[in-house]
Image (cartoon, rainbow, N blue to C red; front, side, top):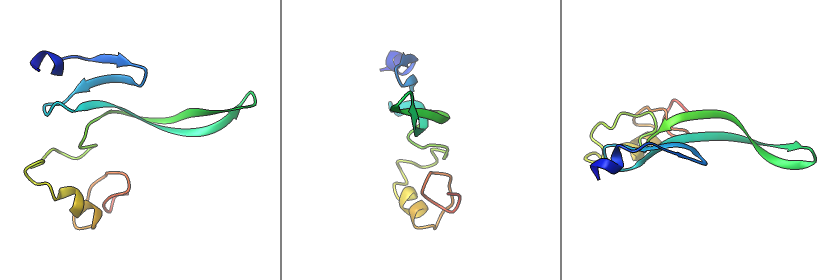
Length: 88
């Protein structure tokens, strides 16, 4: 597992690594459907690089504190997860 976590693999979805918990860290692409040459295509309009399972939140207490995402959704804690918390 130590060797696997040290890998950086270039995939069709961009670079992929693994975090300390063994979960994938990779790019998230925001896309827009556009018509090009008579065909509908997905065009990348923004790339968030190296997104982990925690997005841009610190891993503070997670998973020891499993209710953090529920508190974000309820507006009881602020964070910058898309669609959650007061920063969205």
